[in-house]
Image (cartoon, rainbow, N blue to C red; front, top):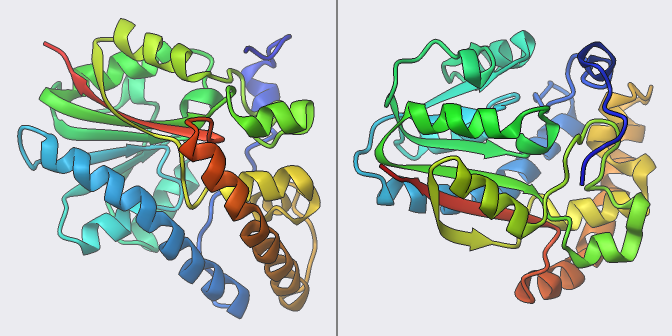
Length: 275
């Protein structure tokens, strides 16, 4: 599914304000949010470590759309060589200054790296934001070493949540999501760009319960509040985050069942580079 009419690049930029990614502050609410994010990102870390183990070498991993870099920090703490890339200069700076992970500000198609530089490239919730997702996948193919691994995650437009919520499904995210993929669409795109699918995962502890909670109560979504620059005191923020967390827990059983039926609200794929 494609957004129509497509916004211009300048129009779209207004929906990516400074600080839309998570970067911890000194207040109690930020500290609690970082603890929570560390917990739910462990799900991503385990999946990606499987891709790292399968790659031909154990050279550097590149995370495209790294945001504040917490995911990369978790991998680095486990002994992996990592690097971030983001089109936002402030996000790349946050990755460097807060999480102490090297990062570059660039688009993947113009990233200043030589061919076959990385053993693994990851893209979590990136492809749906792009005017040309195929171009990013082709660039990733060039940057991966032989038998390198690509890990991508996108909202799943064939999920039960989309059937349940329709146009109010959080995964549509108009106008920031330009393309919404069904599983077969993503697999076909990966294969056309020189990849072979190795593994699929339909559940994300970070994204599936949160996505359903945001579809039910969009005003409580922490990222949505940052994007809209909602004015709130640390106490109010902590209260809203607590209510949102309780709602996510209530959504957890449903999201586990839909994922077990291969209809989770996100799909994560590991693919290997074909010669």
